[in-house]
Length: 177
Image 1: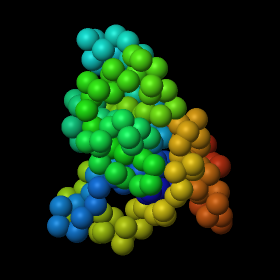
Image 2: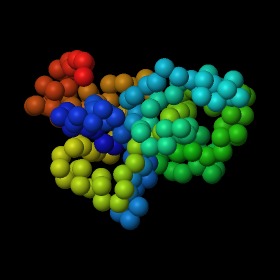
Image 3: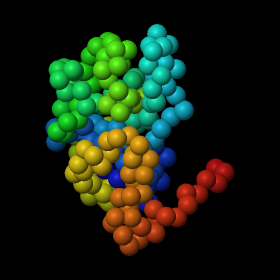
């Protein structure tokens, strides 16, 4: 998990918590911002999926015209990519849709995202070295269920203490540009 340094000014990543789902030195990294909700539902962006009135998060600025999902449906989505114990990325969307319709995929088991966060080979290492991110390896229950995600970044900064806690508790300036 990556937590944006409090001084980060990038509007896409300011005060975010990003779950890294895929990483390799040769290819870079892919992740999803966990604490950025959007005022959209799946059926708003995919009208044919009218039975999926579930929230969507902003996963990041890459491929922001695509829908992605994370879930805990390991035995029901065998094509999914393991992220960590109990957490998977992607799979068969048609099968997921069917599972939701049949009540076999409760809202607490699936998170949808528009776009993802991506880093090319070496880019994330450079950003970590420059101090743009704080990283750790959280347990699944620290960000799942989804109800805890809005406070992920602030909780981590407070846990780090010192100037991190000061920044976390300082209101975000939203002045005119």
